[in-house]
Structure formats: structure tokens, C-alpha cells
Length: 150
Image 1 (cartoon, rainbow, N blue to C red):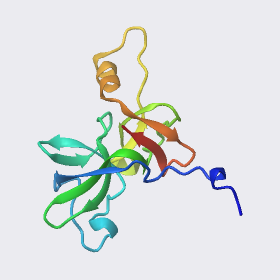
Image 2 (cartoon, rainbow, N blue to C red):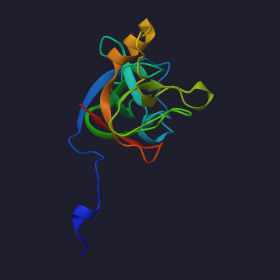
Image 3 (tube, rainbow, N blue to C red):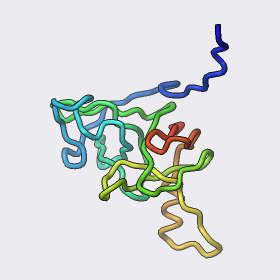
């Protein structure tokens, strides 16, 4: 019998899920899609009171979209280990904090490392650093970057 400690696994560990309202623009219900939407599995951000939208470049990441329902509600993983897709040509490095990024064709709901500020940071750099949360645990697969939401 193999030693179970030889397999490193994080997905779903310490998971907490919450229900939110979807923006019905970047996130829409589609009964023909697994999870109720074509964008399940992507990164979301708060877009209003109790509402979520797909993250765009530099956004604070709330969590991972898990399920979308016809009543315009969604389940979002907000704590624990999740897999999120990296943005187009985005840098993702274990140990770094994340913000939103754009995917191919400017698609929303992706992640990247937070940028680093120089000696005289611009206001945009300061804002992005303030928006950064969560930590990349494993960036080996850019379509499924392991992130600890906390």
C-alpha cells in the first residue's frame, strides 16, 4: 500500500461556501452548463451589497464561483483551498498574493500575482497592493492554480 502522504492534495480542504446574488451580466445562469453557468470555476469579486461578478484586472478576489441557480443566486467558495485559472500571460508564483486578471480575449474571472511597487509607487500600484489577498500555494498548472483563500 502506498503512503498517502506522498500525494499532496489541497482541493476542497477547509472549504467554506456562501450564497450571493449574481450580477447577471458577467455571470449568467445556463441550465445546459455544468454548475449552471459557463463561468463556474472562475474568480469572483464583490460587485455590490451581497452581489458578485467575475473579477477584472486588479480586483480584490472574494472567492471561486461554484454553482449558479436560475433564481440569480450563486454559491461561492470564500475560504479554504481552491483552484483558479491564471490570466493570459499572467505571472503566478507560489507564495505571492493575488488580484484579478483578464484571460484570453479579455475574458473576466482570472488571477495573477499582485504587482510590486517601486521606490515611488503610483496610486494604481498602491491600490493594487491594497486589493491583494489570498496566497498562491501551487502554480505548476496555470489553468488550475492552487490558492489558499483566507
